[in-house]
Structures are given as structure tokens and as C-alpha cells.
Image (cartoon, rainbow, N blue to C red; front, side, top):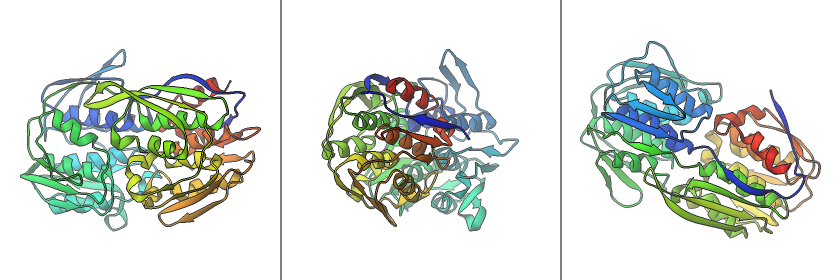
Length: 429
């Protein structure tokens, strides 16, 4: 395992660009494969998760032509994928496995999906159950709750699925199965989640229906138009640099060209409530998403209570929010975030354990945690737990530690941000 040592040697200043949005990158590859005609993708994220999606769709007969960072895709149409000769390896990517399962449920051939040791522990009944209700054979290990998964798709019927968890991946898996089904498929959520799937498919000609903020439908079997897309920067990656500016007095950083989709900016809104000097400026549109810049300056912070309804729009940023809470005065309390236990790691227990190594008092609950900030931080050897966001969050916290910190298993960052440690080294030099 790789070990990275991180410390701040002065204020962090400058402008940062981040990789393309991971959620949009996955969907751009998948949806271009389902279009009828030639799509063009620019700014695709280069992390291992997105690579997994590309490799899986290549195995399903899709040809991606890449030149100078521009990818052209000749789509096969809805229902047009080909049976893979081999097992589909999703690596560490839950997005790949869950969304692809929804697509494969509409294809009348057998598919076997697996992933690494972390992905094989993540819950999959939440997608297999609705796919079976629609008429697909959908099986998994441990009584159909874990990968590897077996999907034999075919003729699907529409349904209305009330999902017990607020998860964009679950919503998208059902909608993508509905794309291949007869009639209109509806998903009802307990809380609003990111809407990249609906935005992108709607822009390609799919008929998206809405009945309030928590009920969305899709009419099956459309012809999808090809598209050209410039993938905006990933706000989840930008969150690390926003947090970094708050770690070191005198710092000010600007992150350029990120998606400002309201469903993805909850972290920045929480920082504002904590007292952060942060400015978001919309500069245009990309892929139907508002895009802009975020500037954040070092600020004195106070702990806050994060309410359950705020969780979906910041679900991927809670590890780095933990680093911010560690330096804020008072208590930061998060509830309604049980979904964090089912990410690449159990992010509630893993985050708590890593913060405690630096001397931060943490109390955990079934659905969240309480972090008491403001104490003197101790140098520590952090463990990534094989989780890219924990690896990067530990590095951000290390900036606030006198003498810095070290991160074991730092290579996990390559899942979403291959150049992260190179960038942080340059900023903190």
C-alpha cells in the first residue's frame, strides 16, 4: 500500500480545476451507448470507477473511439447491447453495478456482474427487488443481497417503486429498467436525490414525468438522440479544496467550472451555515447542468446540526465534512445518514476511528455521528480503509495538524481523483 505524507507549509492560494463529474461521466458513457447515432464526450473523468463503466460497456459491444481526450461513441440503441463473453467487472464502482443492472434487465441475455472486495459487501437487494418485480431474473449472493449478481433480462413491465432509501443509484437503476419496459415506470423517494439521470435522458428525447419533487416517471422504449457533452467539474472533488482552504489560516482557493446542480451543492450550503466565507458564481450551462466557480477563504467555523433532509445533497462529502467539523468550535451533529454505512466503507465508523486518531472526540449513532471540534489535533497515521473519499479527507485534515499526517492506502484516491496528492502537494508547498 502507498503511504502519502501531507502537511501545510503556509497558506493555500490559487485556482484549481478538478476532474470531470463522476456521476455525469458514468451516465455519459452509458447513455451514449443507448442512443441511436454518434455521441461525443469531452472532459470525461479518468478515475478507476469511470474506467470500470467503460470497460463493461466495451464488453457489451459498445465501441468508444478516443482521440486527444475526446471520446466518440456509436450508440446501439435502447435494448441493443450484446451479451458479454465474460464476467463484467465493476471494480469498486457501485454506480457501474447498480445502473448497469437496470439497463441489463431490459436485455434478453445472461450477465454476471462482480467487483472488488469492497463492492461485493455493498447492499444490492435494493435494486434486485424492483428488477424482479418488473420481470427480470435478478439474483445475488447471500440470498440476493450481495454481488456477484446474475441478471437475465427480457420483456419488462412498468411499475411504481417506492424506494425505502434516498439513493440516486437506486432511482436511476429503476428508471433505466423502465427505459426498456412497456408503459410508464415511476419511482417514489423518501427524499430528493441528485437528478442527473432524468436531466440527461430528458435531453436525449426520453419522456420524463414528474408528480411533485419525490415522484418521477419515465415512459419506456423511446428512441434516444445522440449528444455532445462537455462534462463539468465534479463538485464532490471541489469539496476537498473548499475544506483545504478552511484548514490553514490565510488561505483562499477558487475551483473553476464545476457543476452547481442544487442536488450536488449541499456541502457548500452547510459550510456557509458554519460560517465559511464562500462564494458560488454561475457562469453557464453544460450537459443541462448549471456550471460555475466556487471561491472559499479561511474562516472561523462553528459546529452545526445537519438535518436528515440535507443529507442526500451532500452524501458523498460527509468524510471531508468530518475534517471541517474537527476544526470548528463546538459540536457538529449529523443524523439521517445511515446510507453512509453502505458506501465503499462504513463511512460512519471508519471516519470516527480516523478522527479519533487525531484526538477528535466523536460519538457514533446508527444513522450518523457527533463530532466535537476545536481541540488541538495530534499527528497521526491514517488508514484509507480502501475508500477514496476517506483517503482524501484524511489528507485534508492533515493540513490542519502541526507536523502533518500520513495516509496509508493513499492509492485509493485514484478511484475518483488520480492527481489528488500531486495537487495537494503543489498547493501546500
